[in-house]
Image 1 (spheres, rainbow, N blue to C red):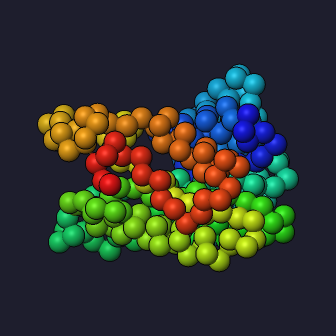
Image 2 (cartoon, rainbow, N blue to C red; image 1 turned 45 degrees about the vertical axis):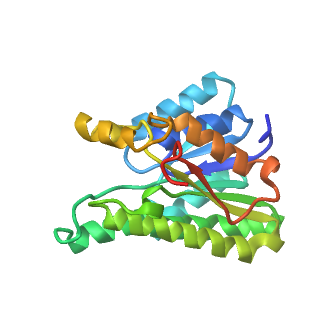
Length: 247
């Protein structure tokens, strides 16, 4: 129970990697605020499973790309849990197409959620961390932000930006008792990857030295480590969970 007594907020926590992170945090003893945008049923399922396992969790709806909604969520989370010690900025979307065919709407939508959402959520909960002189922040980036990827200029740009943001916030907040790190998953077995044609999935796996896709639980374990006191002297770093695909 390495996170016992801590309160965590996970954005985009109703499915995929976000869900695995919520479950892992609860297993480690944290009370978990599960953010979701539209999938209330899925979010309630995650909270129910955590409760049945003896943990504490509740759900909070907000589109993180909208500042007003994030502020509303903040009030609700603080009313329920009193504070947020651990923030995982996980919410993200894709709108894939080649840059030549990419319109302004697809560009803006991805940047709004994947980058602006991180700004709004971090701004919202940072004040409390500064007051208590304690906090742990983890941004979920992507291997795509490190290598680029065909048809994902918007997604790669947003995920790469998170790495720069991580380093800057780490330097600014190091003396305040707050660490800021990133986790960059490779190709993970999620609904998003499951939608990729089998032939394409096979080509991807051939590029991974470990010869398989990763699991959401493997990503979550890395997040828990960075949020725990075991990582108290680690900040500004990117933990790659990619099976050796990018080193």
